[in-house]
Length: 591
Image 1 (cartoon, rainbow, N blue to C red):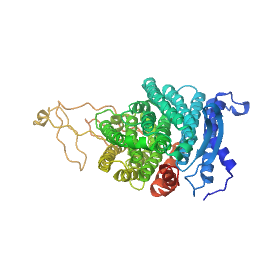
Image 2 (tube, rainbow, N blue to C red):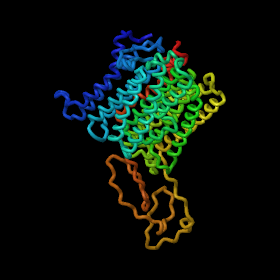
Image 3 (cartoon, rainbow, N blue to C red):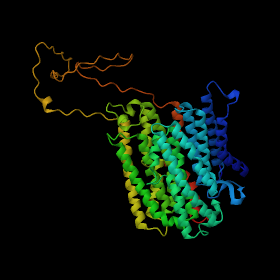
Image 4 (cartoon, helix red, strand yellow):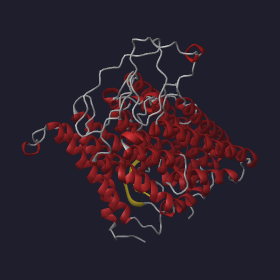
């Protein structure tokens, strides 16, 4: 069933435009603007160009999804297959199915929302021209990763996103941005070198680099030893990008230093490239090798779930000086652990759960990084102790709509039933309860129990964050010391006592040793009520107010909120796409 009947040639054009359009837009962003399009502010003009290009790509992705044949989601659609390098049998092979289509639309959506957000709030840093061009190149590489069906093209697209993200962190990031950018690029490049060797091994030994042919062959053209080596080599590169514990250490630094838009794209789409590679390449092309490494992959996954949660709890505790962006980054390690656990089960239930959790994480964590960026802009810091404050400076009192959105994203991230975060984690745990044949059921049930315990830890740190940031913390009253509790000395006869207000209980006179000199009162703001003050007491300054959710922020965040609710209440929309494609992938290309 298709919502709108679109001809195959138009579908091919749409997919090609989605992949190539952002790249052409990046080139146009660097060229001088035509006289009629310069406007009064060239910086705003180039930012508007970014919104236009990403908006066009999003519209094309939506039309592609509408024209997609939902009755046959396991079939590759909108395919283009043109010889590119005949000597190496490398082909410009594009296509989408029920696995890649949701990721394609998610990438187009998040990039458009980032461009829209940046138009109204440009990032602090060098020329917006370079910023827009880098975001568009990043979008093109990510979309190509989910659309190409050739191993070498997959590698090129996989690497294409590294340089733009490096510069986004290095030039538009915050503190320690250079060290974080270098750590990001070195980790991912080293992993990619190993992955390239594995991809070449698979292509040369099987005689083809075509992913569809490899999935159909289902590993029959590769010996078990070749599959084991290939899974090890390719898996390392994919695990770094995912990121899997213990190859995750680049992620918290990158997220902490990255600008808001960089964090949203890094968490929302770049991390999905690694897990997509596991599903698209390793599961169908090297099933025997995956079966060998599945228990180890599951073990690393559940360690990542618990480790990420414990790291978040450590950052969230009072006095830890934890950074809220860093905490959300560590939460991604735990959430992507659930995705890897689902893949390691090698069952339709587990893999569908992994794909669902991928999309849910992109929506929810993308929203979280948008919100944390907005909080940091208002407070000037993302330090949790400062955000919690000892003066009642909490979000619910200062920006109630922003506080409500942060609480919503937090409870969605912890997997509240009815929201998108619930279904992916539940399905991966169900898959671990009954893994594929040949895998140890007791071991995977142990992994399931550890993963379930991780969900409790996730709820703990997310609720702590909501309590501290949204509700605030008040300083406890000072404990009375023996010296202070001693009987007060009689007041000097020449010290006048202030009369009590009518109906107010009389308080004992303050001792001279504890008396304080009243600070000069600040002039009241016209139209505000001033609370009466008692002479001789220090008054805490009122928490400064700041703007609540702005219209452009609401425009950028509302789609993520709506899709989080929709995916939670109607999971069949997504599972109806992924399940037939996963069934075909795991059965060796047979529907």
